[in-house]
Length: 285
Image (cartoon, helix red, strand yellow):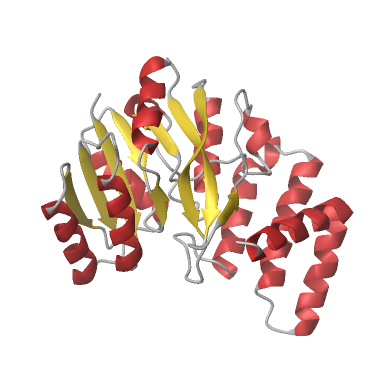
């Protein structure tokens, strides 16, 4: 089984170098690595060349100036790669050394189309457990809450990827969750590896999905795409996510107060407790 690893990147050469190091440290090396850069720069190209010079698998650099976020870069990398199995790693995330070996072995052993592993969120000093995906989910289970799928903890068969058309390039955020929903909609199954083999890094710089207004617009685009199948609770939870981002990025105390009030009204006491618990866990990193 030939494995192609696709790394979307956006002007973060230092993070990219560390992500590539985590790939080349795998106990099961990918057969090829495609780095897709939607903000082409010589520094990123140089990082890729350096990694390629000391790597077992071939690492290629692709300038993708017309790209529009992670989805576009992932799709471009998949189109250029030749592996029957596709693995994705965002440039600011890391794989534990046994990630690819464990995920691809499980895919070989099973007839399902994809494997999803558990994750840890880390800032380099410590970490906490990210939401742990469980087996047997239905599309409706992912409409309002990401069950634990990102672009970095998913290994998928090319046939399934191409059948559903890859990642939706119109979605700047929640594209990983949308991909998972469409995978299930198409009748494909998935397997869970209950080991935390992916490190999702929390850092002050923007992730591949931009924060603030772009993130809010992305959430609204996701709701517009899936609204007809959402329950009232689903819509309230998505509205609460939007309010949470608006609260975090509020430019004035008054605006922050109004967004806090809206968040309490939408999410209820349990939602606010969940928000506080998540913030506390991050503070304890």
